[in-house]
Length: 514
Ligand code: AHR
Image (cartoon, rainbow, N blue to C red; front, top):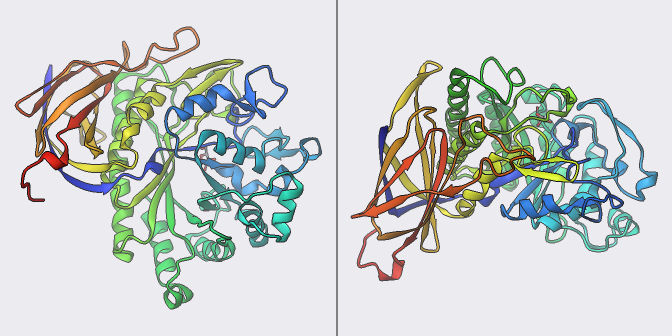
């Protein structure tokens, strides 16, 4: 048994944790859309207008805030007019990025917006810069969001939708340094400004336009974009920024790169290597935030991590282009670590989207015919959901066991906390693979009562859920005590836990000076 100590100042709140940090991503890739979200109206699997109902219900239980679509790399090959009008007349195209399969375009703009409505999620539509045109993107925005009698609004009505939709988030291409066009940062910076200029706000709709950002710690990419944005002539003259956010992508793996090792089984060394790689997201976020701070101290431009998660080899016997992988306790801990970092940098990070929601990479749900399995990662999103739109609580981990991995000291306990409506939520990830950890947290500043404590783990770190044992890894009750302001729990090996607290109402507190 090891020990860890921490302090949380329940009366010291920080920035609001944007609920969109709990966002999702659905690409036309493998079985994410087809045989995932979309089963078609004639399917025997219960569906609403072709959209699979059990997936909608599972995601609604997470309070899913937004969904990014149609890619990824696919976005820069996607021409939106292929996906409107009667389905039987839509062109069949090749999905050159993912499996080189035929895409029948049955899931297009109307189906995606219907899915967002069913989920109660905001739409994040990713436009095509790589192989599209400025006019094509401008038309798509108009088609989606314009209410009057404009040409695109009329076309939308001809296709059965009278009212414009609300689209809050708009992506300006994807991975422009790679599959999105292999551009230089300087070239893309010009393109992003130009495309963004014509992606108009129609009526009441207000777009947050998101520039395609860096791969991992490519700070130069962010620097070039920030400089181009903050120093653009028209931008300084009129005070309007063509785009409002910049993204970056970060995938977790062990060993030498993505797509080189299996989701399971894995060795202890591979496990810890993965944890260290996941924890490295903090260095990367810190770097991008520092660059953005230097150009934009007033926080006018936000940082978006619109692709993150683990990337393992595909499961044996599945299409290598479909990126279907199992999801274990190790993946859940990767998620726990990322959320702690995203919470800490809530001042600048406005959104994050795990890749990807259904049947692809670090998924929330895996389907097999009519069966659906919730993954360990799903449970982290559920256990953490009350962090959405809550205020950061200052948390300091005073001592924690560490392990030497990748040339650094990996803390084996990661933690973050937030508060809203006289409640608090504490999240903890315990990474040691073979020992319990007694964690004691000094809760200061407000009286608190434990209302619920839960833990997520498995017999070993490679435990997963499948059709035979869908609840092998699921949250269970955790013993927690709170005496004289000290919260104590014992975390099993490789576990994620949440402790929910009711706080003494602010109005009952004396003359606490803040
Ligand atoms: O999420 C899978 C792919 O990873 C996306 O299409 C691309 O943006 C990234 O390289």
